[in-house]
Amino acid sequence: MHEPVYEKLTETFNRGGGLPVIKCPELYALLGEMFTPEEAELACQLPMNPVSAANLAAEKGRDPGEVERLLEGMANKGLIYAIERGGVMEYSLMPVLPGIFEVQLMKGEVTEQAKRLAHLFQDYFAVMYQGGQEGGPGMQFPQFPLMRVITVEAEIPAGMEIQPYDRVSRYIENSEYIALGICYCRHNAELLGNPCDKPKDVCMALGEGAQFLSQRGFARLVSKEEALEALDRAEKAGLVHSSSNTSETIGFICNCCSCHCKFIQSLIKGSFIPTLGAVSSFIMAVDEEKCMGCGDCIDRCPVQVLSMQDDIVVMDADHCIGCGLCVSVCPTEALRMELRPDRPLPQRDHDSLDAALKASMGTDPPSS
Image 1: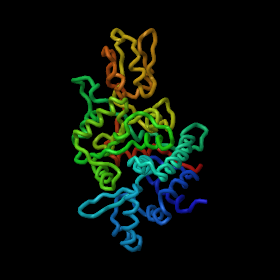
Image 2: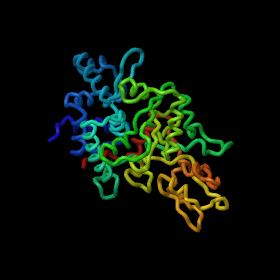
Image 3: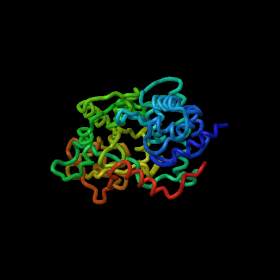
Image 4: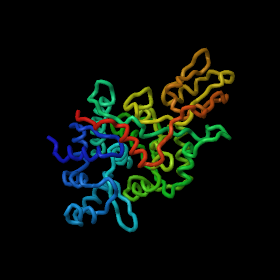
């Protein structure tokens, strides 16, 4: 039997921000591993906007010292967000996805608790997967994409007029704080006994999020040069740049593998959550006269949309995500990136994205 407070906490998570959660035993078990009942009760009282411990205590008629102790404990465990503004620490609840899941595994720890969390997340993801499929429990996912692919910048043709949000380096250049941590998807898989050979130390947070993660020991602050070097390592390893589906600012840059990252799996012909991510502004094109049929691009494609026909590479255009990784290994420059005529437009900022997600929901997510 789960504590009723964990069911109440699921309702709090569904107020907005990130993906909705399903009321189910698997989620209650996961929340019970992370939150004590006392912490869960206070988390339910956190408003949508950041609040100080003193103001929350005054609003709820509680002891300020006790409220601050609980909030600090949850922030140190990566369950709530905390950032200092004007000399005052403010707190807000993080979504389960993206948010709590990523932070729990970002240290790269191999402990008994980390292994328990990995299994509990796996159990809950299985319920989410069923909910995203026709005939499953019927979880109502947002129809507006939460995330988007960002093309390898070096493969965008010189002189092409593109939007600033299509240049991943722009976000690095404009960020005062950048932090690197461990890829939670690949570390989660490793804890479950299913590792891959892709680099894990390339998960990136920007801005205030980088401050929070570094201050609480989940990631380390790095220079802009080290951040760009991490992106280069990710590209060479065949990882896909992805981030929030916003244009003005982004809080993270993930570098995703197709074997473990739920985002990429969502883009592979609708597996996992079909509406989770948006493709980039670009699509690959082939110069058949230059193609020598070596097949390097086929091995490189993370979403398996390339094949060989009469010794010429052909593409399933409906499922190309526009990452640009195939172009980077073509020895004859037969491949190039072109702007999509119907390229998707990201939302301006997080508030606009949250509004778009809510508007595309239709109905509240049901219980399983």
